[in-house]
Length: 324
Image 1 (tube, rainbow, N blue to C red):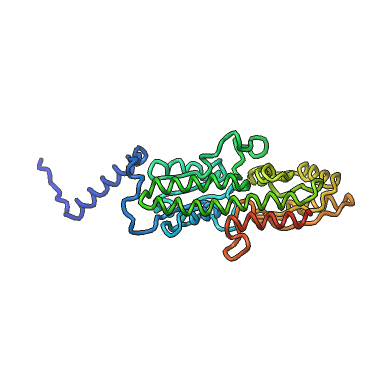
Image 2 (image 1 turned 180 degrees about the vertical axis):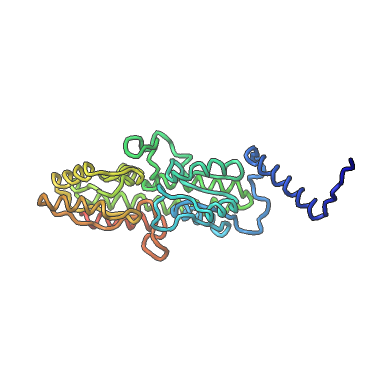
C-alpha cells in the first residue's frame, strides 16, 4: 500500500517551528535564574524604568533617582495596599520594568508571590529589607503578620529605606553612582529635619491627651518614635475584620479617658469610626473627628500630602491641632 507524503508549505513549517520554540521557552521559564551580571543595566541612554507599589516608595525613588529614573506606581492615592490585587495592566508594567521596589513585610499581602517570582528575572527590592528586625513591631497579635509593615511612620525607618534605594540603584546603574549618593544625602538631610520637627510638635500636646485613635493600627511606629499612645479599631491589616466588641471596647476607652478626638484615614471608609463616635455620644461623651490622616497612601497630586515629607507633616499638624 502506497503512503502519501503531504508536503507542508514554508508558512506551515515556520508556524510549527515557532510553536515548538514557544513551548520550550514556557516550559523552561520557571527554571531560569538571572545571571547576577545581568542585574546591571546594559546602557545609559534612557532613564531606568522603575515600577513601585505605594506612593511613598515612588516618592523616595524619585528623590534618590532624580532624572535617571522613570517611576511608575501601581497604587493610586487612596488605595489600600493590604487588599490590593494586581490587574493585568499591573502585570504588564511589572514585566516591562527594569527594577522593581516594594515595601515588604507583607504590606502588599496579595502580591507577595508575584514579587518572589519576579526576583528570578530582575532586581526586585523590598525597601524594608535592611531594617533591624529587633526594632520592628510585632504584627502577630493584631494583623496575623510577623511584623508591622507600616515602617514609614517612623522617619528614621524611612531614612533606612532611602539608603536601601540608593544602594540598589548604584548596584544596578554604577555609572550614575555619584548622582544617587548626592541625591540621597540631600534627601536624608531633609528627613533628619522632619524627624526632629515631628518630635517637637508632638511633645507640645499635653501628655494626658496624647492619644491617637485611628481606624486601623497603622501608626504604631509613629507612636513609639514620637511618644504618643496609639489605638486602632482594626488590626495592623485592614483585611482583619472588626466587630461590635471592638467598637464597644474603643468607645469605653474614649469615655473613661475623656478623649476628645478620633481620626479617620484617607484609604479606609469612615463608617467604622462613626460607629465609635455614636456609641460615645450615647454614653454622654462628645467625640469629634479630628481630621483625616494619610496612613497607607499619600494624597492626590497637588494636595498638601502628595510627597512623603508633606504627608508626615500634614498628619502631625492635624494631630496636634486636634489634641493640643
